[in-house]
Image 1 (cartoon, one colour):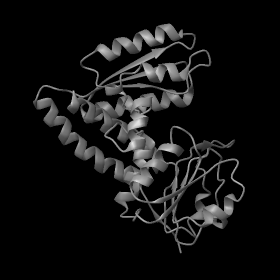
Image 2: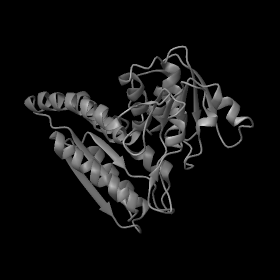
Image 3: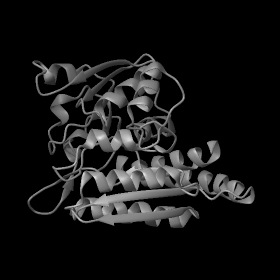
Image 4: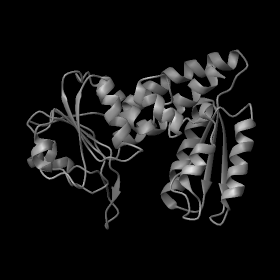
Length: 281
């Protein structure tokens, strides 16, 4: 068996095609969806992400602002900028690129963003709404994972989904989304005693642990669906996921590549949330 490849670039383009129509309709009514991205410091990966987000906005005809601040920017000044963006009517979504410099408290920054403009879905109020199943902005990467499963026509209801990783950004929210799709969900982490055994019981595996090529064919039940959220750069410069792709694809029924799987979906779901914020505004 060789797995079917779930092409995140293709799915992303299909979703963006629909978004273009929605953006045009909003513009006809006098509203141009606007996204403000704030970058503090010179982190190279963050620089790339921010560039991609701004370019994606322009390609869809959205308005975008990028605020690049020096690493020594104080928390007070950053919070003042966020408050200013909260008040700007042409800005519908605000994203502060993580990670932040150590002297800035991430929690305070996330909570400062207006709930109505929290297109990353990290504000505690949006997280609470997600947990109880109310309308909210869903974190972008977890939302992208569910979209990939649906676009591949993979049945989620009644399946055993194992999520490897318990971060607030991916592991926890994607587990909630899988529950909402009626999967039976197990979350694994560094303290899970029988990790291989648990993963082998999964119909759907979501790998979001941040350890390069940790999950291999031996961990998988034949025919499992594998969604690889990990992005790890090796010493030789190659980008790999948390799954050993070449090995795992011999056992899986469906698998996402790295790059080109979940990655493109993250920015697309951010754009989708921003368009939704503009519609609500």
